[in-house]
Image (tube, rainbow, N blue to C red; front, side):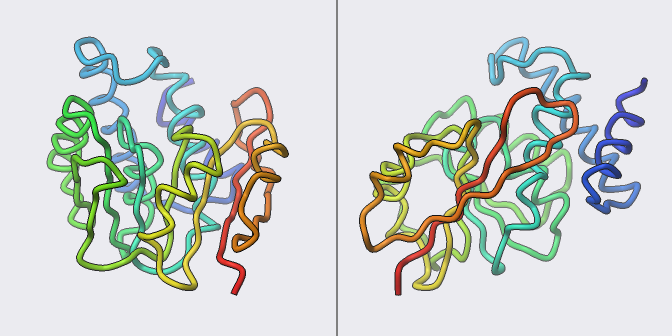
Amino acid sequence: MSLASALAQGLQTMQCALDGDQQSALLAYIALLEKWNKVYNLTAVRDPVQMVPQHLLDALSIRPYLAGTRILDVGTGAGLPGIPLAIAEPGREFVLLDSALKRTRFVTQAVGELGLQNVEVIQARVESYQPPELFDTITSRAFTATEDFVAATGHLLTVDGQLLAMKGKLPEQEINKLPNQWLCKAYKLAVPGVVGERHVLQIKRNL
């Protein structure tokens, strides 16, 4: 099966509607990632066939949970989940943040080559980052333990904003360690082609 067919089939299974240009942009991103990965070691997934479910579909699995117009992707790494979400959601603004120069260099290159007008790339530690505006949604994929994610990013969130932490198995111990001022809901994600459990934690202030 071609990469294009695998992507189209996965999107259909997830009921994630994207037009042809968006699907082409996702595949172009994978091609860039494969090319740069040989030098920069950006992801442990080497095979583009595996990148479709493990990177593209996995990132897009949290699309239904996005809220608001300003989205921050913390510890974006190779641009995940930020770049696939930005391709899928051109009407939202995305800031992709990572502390490592080699990663932000790749993400900046990818954003430029893909022509993504709704993405800003920032190289900084999240603790020291001071944005001009707060964010409605902050995402992370394998960034850190949940309580540390909340502690590191809570100050960047609007009062009624939300954190979306992507996880494998449901991390009940991490959820139980969250301070009382935060409420957490867990949702199971179905990602075609990905073996093992996937969850997203939706964390909001207890107002």
